[in-house]
Amino acid sequence: MSNTPRPVRLINSIAPIRICDNGGWTDTWFAGRGAIFNIGVYPYAEVQIEVFRAADAPERIVINAENFGERYAIPPERKGWVRHPLLEAAIERMQVPDDIAIQVSIFSEAPAGASTGTSAAVAVALVGALDCLTPGRLSAHEAAYTAHAIEVEMLKRQSGIQDQLCSAFGGINYIEMFNYPYATVSPLQVPNPIWWELERRLVLVFLGHSHDSSQVHEKVIRELESAGPDSPKLEALRRTAVRSRDAVLAGDFAALGRAMTQNTEAQNRLNPYLVSRDAQQVIAIAKAYGALGWKVNGAGGEGGSLTILAGDHSYEKRAMIRAIEQENPLFQNIPIYLSRQGLRVWER
Image (cartoon, rainbow, N blue to C red; front, top):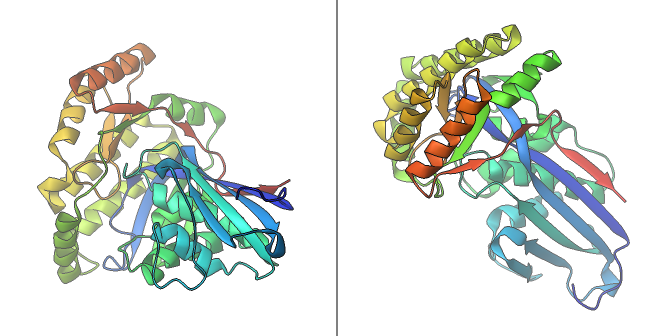
């Protein structure tokens, strides 16, 4: 908003992305019930809202999508979405009061389409920030379910519930979905040495291009829908979440690595295209450098990313990362840190 006065309020929010989602695919409408293990990590999705008096601002709602280099006003009488449906739907859902004008800036260092729940993190952070514009405050669960409803109800997208819950709660989570979309979240409390060691071992590798395999996913969904919630393929995925939870609580990194690998193998049984050729290249290098396990993040398919659980020696982990990045110039190590908290909102 050029030539406008200083904002009367400045609201900030951040929400972590998600990796290592063992049990993914079971948090969906066609699974009915699910068990998911996941980990919230930096880099965050970031939102900042500048609030102005409506009478002082030339435009009532402005979106600044920094990652896309786009800044635009939402026309008051628009029909449909203008440029970024997720952002615009969240603003519509949260009902900005008539007496204010806002500029919403959104940014994330996580690559778009990395299969790390970035869109869910953006939605959760945006819901949390917009929530400050009206009386009352959403709980973490409510923020997650609002973000999920925006994707599923307003945008008609396929979406499980685990990404939004991980962004809202952060940390290491075991999620039990007892009746889609309703779920309980159990944050895993572990001693600092286990937390630090897990953080030291984890590697996130972006495969260099955005995740895009909608046709494959639709095929998998049709097959799983017809098989029903008791499908052995879904049950195999659920078991990896339980094993991951138990391994982390025991500080057993070898068992966690096995659970990650078993989950990736279960994804491959859903459809071989869910574990792409690029992913297989990275897995082969990880094996050669003594990694304990690997998980194709998200639903899998072309593009996206992998989580790798490295072995005991940090120098082997660093050598593995160098080898991966030398294998293909598009492969990229994304530095990550475990996020002890989920959605955070503050104002100054």
